Each structure stands twice: as structure tokens, then as C-alpha cells.
Image 1 (cartoon, helix red, strand yellow):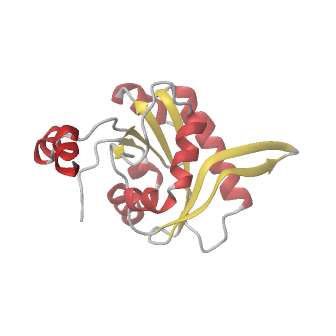
Image 2: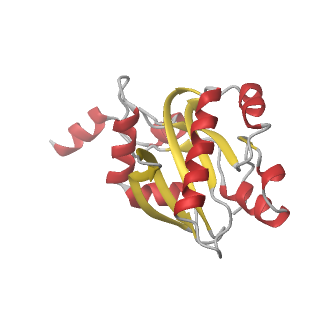
Length: 188
């Protein structure tokens, strides 16, 4: 199923046409992580751990072709240690997909950090038969204009999407379900 991607990417300028189209079709905006219990004080690490705990639901939300390789994936670059939030390989795109989670608004420096991770993954992990790695920044919110300027001159393919963690059921679904009081009455 194809969906309209409303996120921001530089894929069309950084990937061959066919791979760019497939990469855009693979991305979503927003990603809905409704299987994560919402808390106001959630940290980046809390969201990451919740996603990893329920990796099957995470893979379903990401879409077809994703294989989970690890969280806090360790890379040693020039003797320094770096940790990628989530690392995947997409079988359809034939490339690594680096996902960075951010609990707040998108900031331009996040694109620079992800660009570095993509260069490191391409230099350390990527094989000759693999396509260039793709990065995905998942932020709680983003300003599309700021994201577009941030990606404009970055050499690696990066997408910026929002994620949603719901604390309640959608109104239309909630109306169809019995209330807690109704259920308690029926149990008695």
C-alpha cells in the first residue's frame, strides 16, 4: 500500500531515481507508536527501549523489508565510540537504515550528527553490493522549512519525520467501545 509521505527528505537529490522513489514510499510521517505507554517525562532512551521491547510492532509500523540489527549500535570511528539509536537493514532498498530518535523539536544539528553516522556506517558496515545507507530522524515535532534548509546541502540521504505516541484511543474508536463502568457492571 502506498501512502503520501509528508516528511522532509533530500532523497531525490542524493539517491538514484528508482531508489529515491522506493525510499520515499518506504517512509511515513508521522510514525504512530501507539503501542508505547505515554508519559509526559519520557526520555529518548525510554522511547527507544519501549520500541525495542516490542520490536515486532515497531517493524510493522516501519513497513515491509526492515530487519532489526540493534539499538545503541556501537561504532568505533578513529578510536572514538559512537552509538546509533536504532539500526536496520532494508531488504527492499538493499541498504542500512539508521534511525535517530529525538524527544523534542527537530534541530539542524541533528542532521549533521545523522550525516556522520551514515558516513561511518557506509565506511564500516556497507558492502559493495549494498546501496548507500539512508537516515531517518524521528522527532516529536518539526518545522518543515527548518528541516528542508538543514538537509539542502547534506550529501547523505536523510528523511525527517514526526512520531506520535498516543495516550488515549482515537475518539471514533473510543465511542464504539464500552466504558469502564459498563464493563464493570457486566462483570458483576
